[in-house]
Image (cartoon, rainbow, N blue to C red; front, side):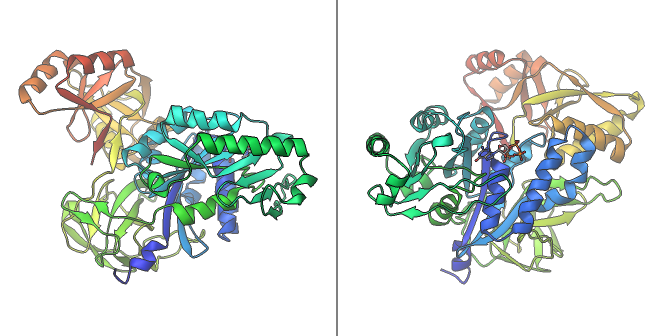
Amino acid sequence: MTELTPEVARRRTFAIISHPDAGKTTLTEKLLLYGGAIQMAGTVKARKAARHATSDWMALEKERGISVTSSVMQFPYRDCVMNLLDTPGHADFSEDTYRTLTAVDSCLMVIDAARGVEERTIKLMEVCRLRDTPIITFVNKLDREGREPVELLDEIESVLGIACAPVSWPIGMGQRLKGIVDLITGQVRLFVGARHGERAEAGALLDGLDDPRLLEHLDAQDLAALRDEIELVQGASASFDLDAYRAGRQTPVFFGSAIHNFGVQELLDAVVSYAPSPGAQTAVEREVQPDEPAFTGFVFKIQANMDPAHRDRVAFFRVCSGAYERGIRVKHVRIGREQQLANAITFMAGEREGAERAVAGDILGIHNHGTVRIGDTFTQGESLRYTGIPDFAPELFRRAQLRDPLRSKALLKGLEQLSEEGATQLFRPLTSNDLILGAVGVLQFEVAAYRLKHEYGVEATFEPVNVVTCRWVHGDDPKKLDEFQRRAEANLALDGNGELVYLAPTRVNLNLTEERWPDLRFLATREH
Ligand code: G4P
């Protein structure tokens, strides 16, 4: 116990993972309303509107100013301070989305009741797996006809490989939606739909299925069927187990409708009651407790200012211990330099003002001119290096093609610097002079081309290349590695840090290669 212990215990730092259109933006807005951050709720919507117009790159640019602040939304709820980190999802999906998940203590997973588990959710869940991040599930859009709840639970279990513990249960769906039953307290919340654009009133709260008022909404036959169904579900599924949830083995499942603000408060209450507060963080040297007095933390994301007249960047920094106060002196461990942290951004309810105080779990935005990199640790003197902030194998690859061959040096420099910011990765094949750019979101190539032109004066395009995925190659036996390097040379490249990477032309090729070289490790992530 230290002075900081109670302050840290009040933090909930989390992100929402979902496939596009499952309702993340809508849910975010409703969550912010509970935090009283009404102004911010409007901002989220504005941002989303801009996003829809967004293969138009300049539109994205315009909303950059907003997106720095809506990248992290801090709001009070009950006696907690909630830090909701945005995971860019539509066209702006990128490696940042993945990396943000390494800076949170838990996630909310939103599933569309009609569509079930979708592809992007599967990928994001894989990232959560790396750290056994606890997940609370919200099955959204109950106000529409969707799939059978039991079927959805089965799908989550089988596709995502996590046990489900339903903690609420829908009474009907679509037009027939009457409410939800809280399976822990037995209480029933009646559904009152909101008309478009209106804020839904909370429906009445009934004591349980025996409450006579329920019969005003359900006939006796339906009520009997509901009882049977609930009995069946409770018999067949695990009951909620806090430890299993915290260990990432079980997800409590809630049902609701974000647009009708139905089931949302229950969800937020669950984050407060169940989701972990910031815990110990692992550094190469030791574990760091969140309530230790000395200030430490790491950078998990860098966002460049898109305006070429202002080349500054904002580094998103997760506080891991101690307390930030304005003007605090810190050590930038990688470059061994002391500096003052002045004018860091905090993210309280939509205001972008100088931060007064931040403790473990809180996020700071630090202005810099390119000196800060992803994974960098700041401390108050100790030489700590936090781990667990990885690069992820890109899923899209393109070859940079220059208009003017004489600009190749500038091209290389630009691509190297952009890759240091972390939204793209640069690969240099062993057997050619190609520059191959990898990304997890397609917009990143447009961003790279735009920034190369405006910041480095290089006109480049990005052409398709025959690579579908890549793996970092490790091995304990230098002889084996040498042999592999000779045999597979044509598919090998060095990444921005000079590490060996296998560029696979197909998934099948990757599988075969892995089988053929059992002594080597083919890793889909690389730690900073
Ligand atoms: P995203 O951020 O995950 O991409 O999803 P978003 O919240 O933008 O929601 C995607 C669409 O689904 C939106 O419709 C939104 O209104 C709708 N939606 C979200 N939650 C619910 C819900 O509980 N029930 C129903 N029926 N629909 C829901 P849209 O037509 O794309 O946009 P809009 O014109 O409604 O804003």
